[in-house]
Image 1: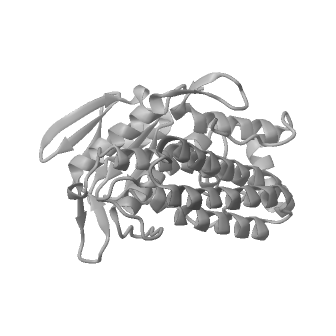
Image 2 (image 1 turned 90 degrees about the vertical axis):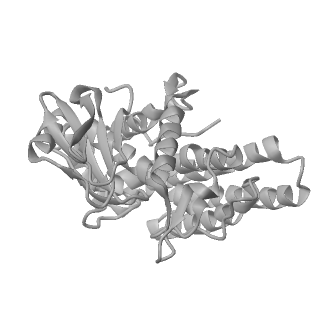
Length: 344
């Protein structure tokens, strides 16, 4: 099992990626900017409308188990490549059987959503603890949202079908993001509402960009563990959508992405001048800012925490791999239920 999610992020537009011996070479404007051995990588992510990778490199990445993702400048996934699906065929057959059984899907999906709601509640409680002294009105609103999430968490545990589960999760997400402005202490940033494709403000730009990075990491974890990243339980089959990766990332959204975005904003590691607005109104990060955000994301993944189920110290970047393997153990019958990741 790979112990770290080592990912090469290529932020240069019109970059050309080529195979150079047993390494990937990144060329830009006729010059080689970087050369990285493939055995050091789990994934490659490019940002830009015109980035390209050679067929020989894609073949080498497939053979080495390196996932390649092509993203827009603001982090939206356009396409991805992979080689033959790894892992035990019996595991994948069981995954497909469960995916065809809506009741079985609900049993796993509701634990994933329960993990997401519990982690969202913990993040809000931590905000009150760290920043609650100066604004009692904001604290009252956040506490109300916490009660809403607690109610949604109880209802989630009793959900008997996917439609009701999606309804509960949607209501909880709306309440959570309604409280998001109270979590921002930097007056230069705001959060009118959640906007995705495209993001229409700086906060949403950061969220969408890092959610795309998390989706890539979870997709890599699924493939590395033998799961089919396209076949989810909560996110149903749709061409081009990595349903299982999207399922797996739900419990990490508040813990990994939301907390990092708030930290970048409130500690003034990013500023309004670091973004640009296109004619369509879409907001994008400038190249330098994108690199700084990626560095912050990678540093966050290097931090150690104690895993709530395994009771062992692990790096945060390893969490998607561990959760994918815990799901494997559940599908094989080694665990009675899927244990979601819970932050403490």
